[in-house]
Image 1 (tube, helix red, strand yellow):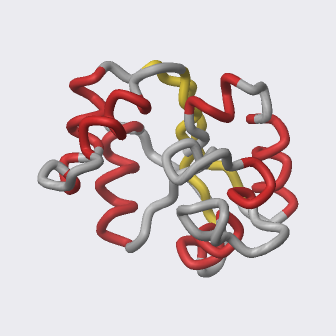
Image 2: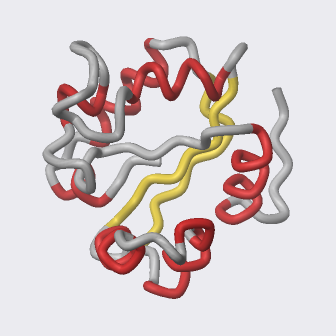
Length: 132
């Protein structure tokens, strides 16, 4: 996912190029303007966390590019490419180090496990079939 801070700064194309350079195949891509209800549903796992309100308000504040990506070891590789959630702690050369502005405005999101990925694909690409 390419978050509203990145689309607002018009760097989504740079991030998509990086995705392809890293060997990912883009199976699906949509630009969405999340409603607050959609953001709350997507991040429901964090409902009881203190940052939930700020997170969902931010994610519903602008356009987001949602992607379905494929490659060997995709989840781990994407998380390595993104870097730590906090750009100040992210490794040099990661997307969040290069483009993140803060722990919230960190340009990208990625699934952390296969079950999370399945939920997230279904949330944004419901009814779609992907061919490899």
